[in-house]
Length: 481
Image (tube, rainbow, N blue to C red):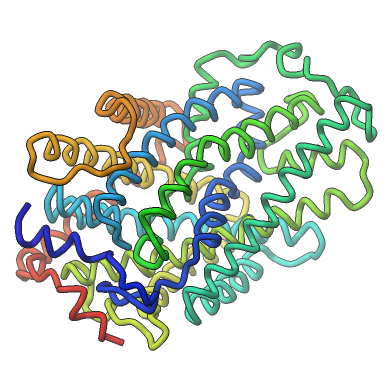
């Protein structure tokens, strides 16, 4: 391990006072908050809103798609957890890419993750507008703009306010899904409500488990992966979490339970209460089920929960993009102004720049409100596949260096690595291949190619200016306010 690596290893440690660390951030995220952020990161618009179109395409096979993708996601998160245990830093993905793959990889990873969350937040404010239309005749772009402004203001104030907001957003989502599952079980067992034909045989009786064929079921993996965007957010919180090694480990260990309950459990109940043929793209299956059961006001309550999920994800998007821009700036790969922190230890310039870019989502809603969600999710999907792939590659290199005695071994290790790491990489590669077989997937690939050209051009421009070697000591920058 070089002297530079040794220094970076300390760039996430924290004094016992809890007031700050060598990155300049405040350790304002308590273990309770981190746990709920981890839970909330697994529940978003991709599940609540995007599942309608996925059910229409794949039927009950969607449950198997979520299981397969969930296994891959768990491997990715355990790999990330091992890296975080080795060196917990706020800009985790970009930092590890820098260390294990070089400065170009770090540059591309950091900017790509930033783009993923900018696009994801655009998607969230898009569907927020649709949810508000359930009660009020307000144009989606107006709601999108208001939501963006509110979340932007909350993130500027303090990391603690962000954390508290995420805690309660996530609490609402968790309570609603558990309540929905229990209510669905009541419908199936004691005939509660007025659903037409509630029975678990709906999972296989109407065309089988693969009603549209196995190939069609594979094609929904793009939608499924978008639903998992956000599970890696706990890695970004490492620089502001109290006791990061202990807290993040616990958050990752509960991931299989969260996937089983919130994704598989919810979809099992939904497609048992009503035939998969009743669900359509553009309509939340959660709202549809409660309308079919006939519970007064239940659909409105669930719609409120869906709105909460959108607000939560947008809140997380603004948080993560601001931190990632600061990480890039500290490496000399973004304008130096982006490294500044406010008196409350918040990267206010990075947050402001990210929110300004998210206004594009408002414009997309004005130009093409019907297709906005599909366009934006395709951008997010290709980006997150790349970032997750980088995590796995960095993990492989880290393990190899540990085996050679060059780096210390973490005490929190991915089981059966490197085989599980390679299998997860193969799964991500399969999804990329499948993107070529759908219109939205091909759009994502084209967007990915364009983005690769743009970000590579940006790196070359910085190289010619001689700025990519100007990595800044975070400790010195902690005073930059």
